[in-house]
Structures are given as structure tokens and as C-alpha cells.
Length: 402
Image 1 (cartoon, rainbow, N blue to C red):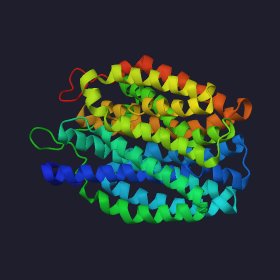
Image 2: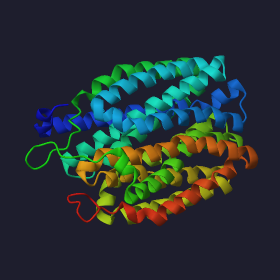
Image 3: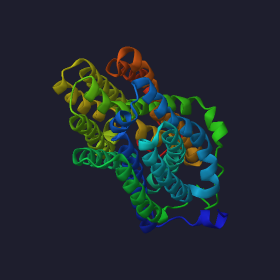
């Protein structure tokens, strides 16, 4: 990317086109991930996996992300967020095809597919968050939570499609292969409107940017990462285990358990869509601490209540977990020159929890049941509430919602 490109500040039409592209990237990522997550119970049954074995299989996604996430900042610096999303969406679609085959042929193929899926998903997510931060800065108002609402909308659509596929008896291979084709047809075209990731100063010259290595050493960035880690753990655990817990521990049918997962995602989507004005009015710290408490109440109802109360708990859990990740992304991007590096670091921390947490729940669930293992999520949310003060913008940052 040349300095001449960097000096071309995007006009309103370009920013709006980029915003639409970011929404589509978020929706596509959520749809792809939830399509897989909605079929975890079916894959578990087909391959006869106990909770510990399933947890280890899910660890393949985490392993791919652990490799992909730290490299994402370097990849984005070389390719830009647009090309990174294009490439990684194609890789993820191919990985879904491998997962589709592995769901019926055996664990080895499944693990390979999930590993590549995690690798691609991590880089795709970091890239779209970096572009989301750029668009938010150009718009001059809080929009990150709505971008993440797009992700949640995608997960709702993916979960509902999964429930329909289960009800209609459509096999996992056909379902996931169809999702892969849809991703290939939609995502690469939709992100063509992304704007430059290069920050320019008042003179229109490319500004010096902080490196990812420097961002990894910053205390505030780490504390923001802790908040994002806890909320990502809450979201990721629900994605992989909420339906399983409803089916196995609360005794619901597979269709009902999948609908419970969809309820969680719907609550998260609604809260994210309307969260921006709430953050503007009450500030990041107060809102995040309140939502952490709401999520803890939901978790306790889900774990210790009746099946009916578990559905209420899923609703509160989803609403409470909604704004932690997008608010962390906005906080990491408070200072534009260092936004890309810090967003990359915080997203990496968050997605490690998002993907590595569920396998840990599976291993613990082997000892105390999955339902009781979910209480770990409440503990992490309590820690997030304690360090949420780091979300306040630094004194030198201007024009950023508190």
C-alpha cells in the first residue's frame, strides 16, 4: 500500500460502502461459525464422543486460532484488511468442506478441518475488527456494537438454519457444504468497498503506527484484553455447550436444545444492536459492569434452575455477554495511530478464550458435568467487572465515546 493511497481520505460514500462491507463480513463470519456449532450435538452422536473427547476435538479450532491470531496483525499489515478477509473466507469455506467430510468419516479428518477453520476464522475476525475500527473512526460515532450485532445476526441465522436442518433430517455434510458455497459466493464480493487501513495525520501523511510487539507490552491493552477474554469465554462457551447442556443435563430434545442456543444468540443480537446509544449515555465502564452481573445471574439460572428457568437464564446470559467484545475493540482503537496493533492484540486475546475456553469446559465437564462446569464462566465475568475501568478512553484520546 503506497503513501499516495494513504493520503486519499475516503469520502462519505466510500465510508458507507465500507460500512456495508464490514456488516457483511461480520454476518458471514457469524453464520459460518454458528452453522458448525449448531451441528456439534449431531457430530458428537455420529462419532460417539464423550464430553472429554468432544472437548479435545474442539481444541483443534483453538489450536488453529492460537497460530493464526498472533500472525493476523502481520498479515493485515501486508495485505490490508480487505484482502485478508477475502483470502481467509475462501480458506474457511474449504475447511468447512473438510469438516463436512470428517463428520461422517472420522475424527482425524474432522480435526484437520477444524484446525484450518480456526486458523482462517481467527485472521478473518481480526481483519474485520480492524476495518470496523477504521470505519467507526471515519463515522465519528459508536458503531462497533452494531457490527458485532451483525455477527450475532449471522449466528442466529446459522443456528436457526441448523435447527431446521435437524428437524428436516438433513445430514451434516450436505448442510455444511451448502454453507461453504454460500460463503464463497457472498463474502469476497461484499468486502470490495473496504477503505484503507493506513491512518493519516493532519497533513495527510501516513502516521507512525505502533507495532503489535509494543502493544503486547502495554498494561492498558492487557487489561482490556482481560475484559474481552472473560466476555469471549462466556460467548464461546455458550456457542459450543449451551445446546449440549440443555439436551444432556436438562433433558430437552435436540431440536429444543438447538432453539435454546438460538434464544441466547437472539438476546445477544438485540442487545448489541441497541447497545451503542446506551454506551454513549452511561459510559463503557458502568454498562460493562452491569452486563457482567446480568450474565452471571443468567448463568446461575441456567445451571441451577429448571428447564424453563434455564431458558430464562439463556436469555439473560446472551444479553449480558453482548457488549464486552465490541466495547473492548472500541477501547483498543481509542488512539487511531495505534489502533490496528492494539485491536489485533485484544482480538487475539479474546478469540483465544472464545475458542480455547469451550474445550476446557468439556474436560471439566467430564468430571462434574457440563452444566456445573459452566460456573467457571461466572467467575471470569466477576474478574472482568473488577478491571473494567481500563475501558475508559485515555486522557489524550478525543472524539471517542466513553
